[in-house]
Length: 108
Image (cartoon, rainbow, N blue to C red; front, side, top):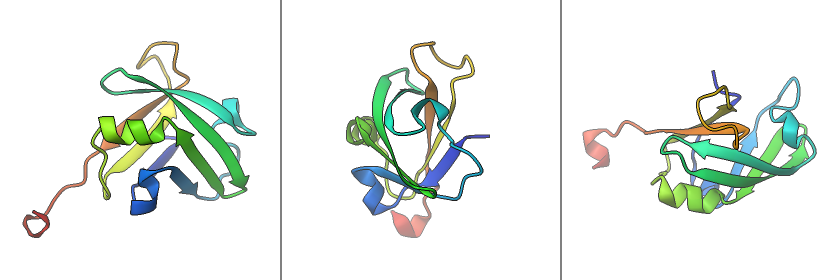
């Protein structure tokens, strides 16, 4: 199960805003903000800037917009971030996956 999973809304296309109550810091390596190294499914390495705005709001920026463009992320898709458990190279602390929204015929 992912540390964070969020359905993308229009405002997330420029920076991912995660609003959720957490029991503890979801990304301990960037607990007070900073940078996170993340690897996507195709194998590209991304550096996301991470900012803790409040106890229930975190923002990812940095390479986020390039990640969205390169991975064709669309509103309605879900992005899941989890710890790197050997799934990708050790250069990345985390892994990110895009789960595509299922389109209805009326959406096309």
